[in-house]
Image (tube, rainbow over all chains, first blue to last red):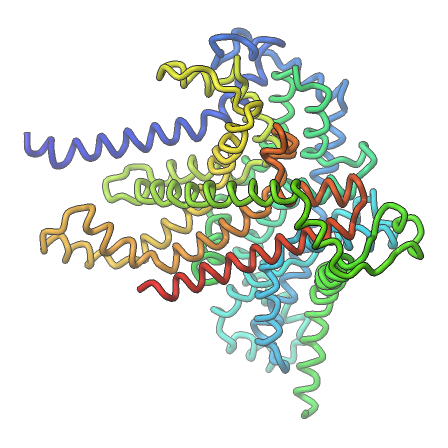
Length: 277
Length: 295
């Protein structure tokens, strides 16, 4: 009896709470998946169904054929991929300079950049739109890519990571006569691989999930990213619950799979930004 | 400067130039321009012909302060920040305590499950929640009917629309703070708990006198990033309610978007953006001050 009271009961309550919590948190995502596989109309049913009476892929087929969502999937993948590759290069170069190269006002410059992170991105959006309009980049992929290419948080992540790497390693390479770019390319980048993976997930997810800026920049519907296309689709197909759920699955599934595969790196990034920042 | 130092500075410049140039041109320059813009009457005519642009001093700010709609947006945004923020922080701390408990089996699974909504696309899950909130067929009302609660028109009722958006937003992002809290909890030396247990302190007193004080810096960080993020609420009302019903979910950023990019009142919208920035800055300073004053 006392063993039950002291060991098993707390464990039972604890795991009951955890499982109930996990079920509630995952329910919207599971229902999204289930509803996307239901025959048309079945999601508008009382009492609500949690599982399709017959699994159908007709809504996914409609999205790819009739509604051309494949194009938006491609737009999203292309934009997020391009931003990620470019941002990795540019931010890792700057992060390296802030961590390992000596120049005047280095730390003051870095502190200034960090302080600028309190400025909400929305403040810059209106003039940024006008600037890109002048440059002829509104309604182009570049209009979405360019503002995401350099990122203060990305520079910060790389710098924090590199601070832990001893200078002696670099000095040895310099003694051997390696130029700074060579050191960066063949010594620093390989050393940075874990944090580069982290930064890549952050950047890719951020670009994939971004809504407001692509909504502003892209006016031609053929250029829409998935989130913008989905919000647009909702306007015409709000009654087609199953179709909308298929569109939502298509939008979140790639990033969820990416997260599940690379969870460790993603969480390491939050902790590097959250506890040492 | 010796030749060696100059070479070092030169190569540092080459590594920094792309990032700093991009940040300067595509972030700092627009921020300064936005401040200038907020003192002009930049509208759809100026968009076509810049000679139409006039300097109007503080007119935009005065108009904002006199606009009932702007005050509604401010009120709604504060509602979202002041109710959603603490709710998110409390829930994430609760989840972190459960996941991090000594007895918990498979903490990795529960951590991932609670975190999953964070990585999802906001627009997509906002679409999903629109249907969960359906007054007749929605899962939420069905669940509540088991508890004897009458159906609620979540997104159609002016009093329920904001709570509905808050619930969805908290679901979406509490996992992020949970990860930070778990790290904070793991940094607390276990000996402290042992000592307290030997002294006969019960679970609540251990939480109150060890966990909470030692989580102080984590709390501050979590509270700050949550507040800053919540002040910028946009996509949730854009997708779920378009600011309605009766403007009850119109946020400052949604107002800025509508004024700036739908009606092209860019001077006025820039002023709204700067008021938001000022609020975020004031909130940040206030939290830092409160934290410094409390022991």
